[in-house]
Image (cartoon, rainbow, N blue to C red; front, side, top):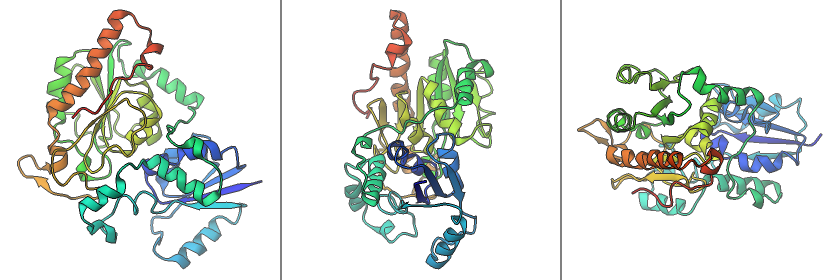
Length: 357
């Protein structure tokens, strides 16, 4: 048996970056083991790409090389690993920075120069290629496509029925936030509730990422047109759900990264980074209008717009821009349905030719 070990400290989206390379490496190895955080199992489980996940304990001492070596040796005694790839500091640490990283304090202009022209999927693929000497050029520029299990296909097929959503409704997925404060868009009610939903009665909003149900009360008066999934689905289900949506509106989160597998139209609420995770031309990127963005920092606090108690970058994306970007997709679907174009043909039409600025 020929085995591959992958060590990666990344969270949901960081693990999805591995998929294009893994789609090729799967045919080279009989056994692939992934060592890292619990999020890796949620992101890459059910894909058929990983045979075993080894999860770090909560008190794992990543800073102690002796501890790391001993722990890994103990956990992998039952595995025959012929090749190993360490993906630490490929994206976080080299292109994006935590506040305990010395590069966090670099001038913003330097961070932007380092990220110019970079795509995170391709950066991780090249790391695999450099470490293993296997030609992965066919993975460059590819989407993170994975196979759906039979159970997942059944769940997607029955989703509208399970939530009492009409067959002809427009499904708009809204991802509330990721792991950092500057990803939370402060104008949800203005843009979605009082904007899109009032203007377009066929729109049903699927809430993703609102784990504590904070939006249940303000959204209760829309006649069942708001479905908040909260903690009822896994990360894997959240991002494969985007395959059946008519539109996804999201900040830069793991779900947005996973959604790159599909040609579903998307609106990116860009804050701390721009198009580094975008595949294809179906995404409208709404760029922030403040000097500090993009900062390429992974932070939980940043400069605040005191008037609305929200980060400057998120607050600078006016709700009218979100309504306009979504409106183009909704109106486009209306025109397509009026012309009688078959659903299979819709995916071939690119909804965006350039970013909505």
